[in-house]
Structures are given as structure tokens and as C-alpha cells.
Length: 203
Image (cartoon, rainbow, N blue to C red; front, side, top):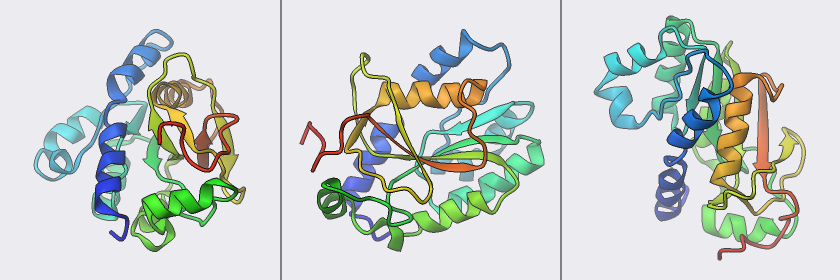
């Protein structure tokens, strides 16, 4: 990866906190079984049987992890083999060079040139699959249960939002899985409304 290692690891660690919140949000709204499973490299490579068991018979999978192609390509194959179609995957902004406005300079300084990393190959693998996917290009994360509104930008639109809460992402992902949000085969940039700033408020 050409992303700065420290920033990438911090970003991934933040994302990995979502699972319990997603389960809480989805469980009360729909009785369908969702594999709201956080897949990490070790689980996919070493504990493949457990990952397959968790996915089989599920209506959807939320990958709360920004994966590289060596993880994503086998996962897509497993989703096909286990019959899972609905797939929500975390990613990062700027895979299409879409970050714009006041946020662009700070973001690229702290995250690197994302469009030159293999995260682009990950996104391409998802978009070239036959899954009912939504890619969530998620900006910088922080905690605030009171802020759950989401600003959505589609592929091809400029992305300017500097931050979003983990609670907002969790709620949005749960709504994608339960059908409250009607997006299919799309790559969405998600941020907090009104945060087209030069940098996140917590920096």
C-alpha cells in the first residue's frame, strides 16, 4: 500500500468498532438473519470454515473493514458460493480522485494518494462482481451518538465532508441491510452534513 501506514492502521482500527452497534440497530427492525460479521485478514485466511459458516444462509454481509484485494477477491468468491448477494463494504474516499474543496489538501496530506493504492483494485473487484453491493467511502471517524445524519454523494460527484460519526455509519449500514435505504450496486461517499471543512473538528 502507498497509504501512510500509521494513518491506514488507525482508520481500520476505528472502523472495527462498528459491529455491536450494527447488530443492535438491525436486530429490532428485521428478523432476517444478517451476517453482520467483521472479517479481518486472519479470519479469512486461517479460519475460512468459520467465515463460510457465518455467511451461509445470511441475507447480507457488512464488511466493517477496509480490505485489500488479497482479502476482497476471495471474499467475493465466498459470497458467490454461499449464495449471499447483499454486500455492504467499507472503503475510503479518493479512490476516484473525488475529494474536493477545502478538505482536499489536508486529506491527501494525512491519508496519501488513495487512487494510487490497491484500494482501487478492491473497489474494482466489488464493482465488477454480480453482488448487490454498496461501497461506503467513509470519511474520518469520531464518536457522537447524537449525530446520525448522513450526507451521501454518488460516484462521479465531488466529496467534501471532513468527518462522520461511527454511530451515523452504523445506522446507515443497518438501514442498507434492512431496506430502509434503497441503494443498490453503488459506490457512495458518506460524511456528516455541514462539514465541508479544511480538516475534521477533532484535529
